[in-house]
Amino acid sequence: MIHTGYTLENMEPIVSLAKRRGFVFQGSEIYGGFGNSWDYGPLGVLMENNVKAAWWRAMVQLRDDMVGLDAAILMSPQVWQASGHVGHFTDPLVDCTTCKLRYRADHAEQTPCGNPEWRKQGLTAATCPGVKTEARQFNMMFKTFVGPLEESAAVAYLRPETAQGIFVNFANILGTSRKKLPFGIAQIGKSFRNEITPGNFIFRTREFEQMEMEYFITPGTEREWHPYWGDQRVNWYKHLGVRDENIRIRDLPPEDLAHYSKGTKEIEYLWPGGLGWAELEGVASRGDYDLGRHQEASGRDMTFFDEEKKERYLPYVIEPAVGVGRATLVFLLDAYDEEPDKEGTRVVLRLHPAIAPIKVAVLPLSKKEPLGGLARTVAASLRPHMMIQFDDTQAIGRRYRRQDEIGTPLCVTVDFESIEDRAVTIRERDSMAQERVPIAELLPRLHEKLGM
Image (cartoon, rainbow, N blue to C red; front, side, top):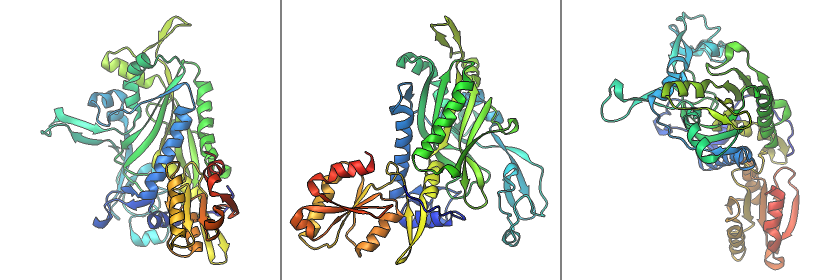
């Protein structure tokens, strides 16, 4: 993919493009929005599904040491007591009594001041001159009730992570899959966190989808597997088009570790605007914390019998975890490009073909028959093999620009000569180069260009 190196100063161009082209809409927009919730539109849901499919392919399909799981969102409250989330899944909450802003103490530098005038001066929660309360711990789990009565015995939680569903099913999967260490269990599913300060578009939301994997290893081998999975995950982003200069990995200091972590590698992206380098994905070394806690609380055996060593032990765990929305946002930001052309500025999303929502657009030069009919026949022949879009509205140049802006790698133009020579023109998004191909050879040629 050819990128001009254009750099976004903030997220506004992506936010605007996302709504204008149907990637992401504000949730409950007709009622003024709601709590930083977002709805994925026609193109957004296609791209999200492609991101999930690419993750699943890399993490499960292409490996022989991985299995999948889809665990329930609602789990026994005892799960969250044992995991430590009831007691430790908290953030430091501060209130500014002057400008009425509520924010996370550790995000004060990134949070704009609540006073509109001070905000215009560039003040943040950290530099706001208002009167502030002492930080207090706020549990981020959403609480609900199961059954008709709202009483303490009916309390349940919306899961704040998908990982615990994997841990409580470890013995079941170990017994049915016949896997030996090391092996992993992967899961994609919804999680919920009552964030104090959600924001920055889909960067941080209260409802989100996670892609998590727990890799179970022999204790003492974590120094081998932890950097291995850090490198694997960074390379996945680079393979799908994220530029080297915009991604890095670092070890978190001890004071920043989660309650379950023995060490965490944070994959960071260079976000536009005031965010700068911030988390994209975490790769945590969780030790035997989770299996040990659940074994103690449930009384169930969570150990693995090592036939070579003839002993039982609790496996250690390496966990790569990322939000689908955050990964999707990174791919959008990194793919966004602008370049001058004869009509002013050409906006291009240089998305990798694997995650582009539309793979091929079929564009007839005219709606009129027999050209329109031939173009629809070509589109119908491609539709079973890939996600395509048929567009016969407006001038061909404008249609090319529309497809460039939504990241479509290839356009197939059906022109008047196509009726005679039974050939069409493939136009590439990045180079704008064109190639004439017989209709009979179109599908294999498209597959070749898309790397399918």
